[in-house]
Image (cartoon, rainbow, N blue to C red; front, side):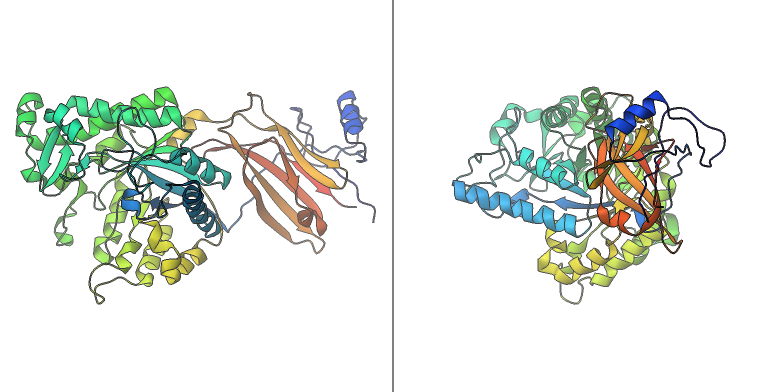
Amino acid sequence: MKRELFIILISGMLLGGCGTKRRATTVREQSYTEKTQSVKKDTIEIKPWVKPYVADVRHEMRGVWLTTVYGLDWPRAKADSYKGQKVQQEELLLILDRLKDDGFNTVFLQVRLRGNMIFASEYEPWANIFTRSGQPPQYDPLAFVVDACHRRGLACHAWLVTYPMGNNTEVNRSFRTSKPDWFVKHINEWYLDPGVPEVRTYLTKLCAEIVEKYPVDGIHLDYIRYPDHAKSFNDRKTFNRYGKGKSLAEWRRNNITELLREVKKTIEQINPYVQLSAAPLGKLKHLGAKITPHGWTAYESVYQDVEQWDREKLLDFVVPMMYYKDDLFEPFLLDWQRSLKHTAVIAGLGPYRLSEGSKAMRWKEEDILCQMNFVRNVRVDGVCFFRDEFISNRYSQMRESIRKEFRTQALLPELSRGKNYLPTTPFDVKLEHRGAEYYLSWQMKEPIDKRIKYRVWASIKDEKGDTANRLLADGVSDLSFKVPSSVLASAERIEFGVEAVNSFGVATPCEHGAHYMKQ
């Protein structure tokens, strides 16, 4: 049978009905025929495109916290020499290759540890984790990681620990001495005081610096709360100065919320496409007498008013640290889902529990898998694991179990703020035969925007008449895609479609797709 190519031209013209129609070739089509000389094109079909349903493609975040403090996850090798630097970088690449191979799509990289950074900051010193001497390495670790993530199709969020500044040995003494009113010592640790307005401005500058210098996908705020045993946190002087008639609890909650307001406003002015998220405690609030004991909660214990954050749409998503089991996990996850209307919920899971405590008290891999299944069953937007070591080869059974759960394709969840930045509609979708290869191409009305990526979908009917729907590609950067020969090999008919996707995972589909038919 001779192969002929039937192409849907997306021209902005709509012909009545969806069937094939024969008509004279227009000037535009003649130029297209000349451009694709090897393609005989005597039938033009205009048909609205409907995105096919693909059962094994999920919308879920599959994330991991990559911890740099003390080099817990990375870096292990020291970069005091060129050889050491290469080994250190290779360590990171091996981690990212493993994560990509295991089905992950998001990395939260710790960039601020305890008042120090993993890049050359204008405000804070280098973290002393990269070399034995404590000196900065001869490369930019943050730029290296962000680029390596993006090359693998992994989102990279800059994870900052906010208020903790370390113990007497770790704290930046010159900073503490120069700003004594900013610091509070609490249970042998130093903290920035959330009630000091200048502290909020300072932390906002740190976030802004990262967004200005690096193409991170998001800013992720950790420990954005009052510390453990917060009732004894000695901020009475600050409260007397700034409380303005509020109760202590109201004032503290507003202090945390005010930091988020400042950070959101600032980074949106720099780059509105950068996401903002936080990792609150795993239990949002007390659920009454049904569940006892509760332990500590975000709202009551550490003054995180996440429902207010949600009402003000301050965050794109939260990653509550839900490192509990059974009645301390499922009801609280449902409470997160029920309570937040505008903010996506990503369940933070704790495989570190596999090694914590006595052998009898340690969790089993099945505990994590049960939680993953519950997250999916109630349609929460994904999971994030603390931390990378516990899903690596050191815990091979845990790794393999997660790998099996992530064996199907996953797209990042659609975040509600992305609806404010919808891409324009892809048009003029064409299938072109170039030599022995086929390319799908399309056009966009707006100038090329690197923040916009493309997904290519296909509905494939084989020689037996069976139809299979597939996501052929996600994260395409160009306005064209080489169709794998394996897709065409046994196909009688293929309908191709394209979506433009913004950085929030929100997609705009093409109105018309391109058809391939074999006769």
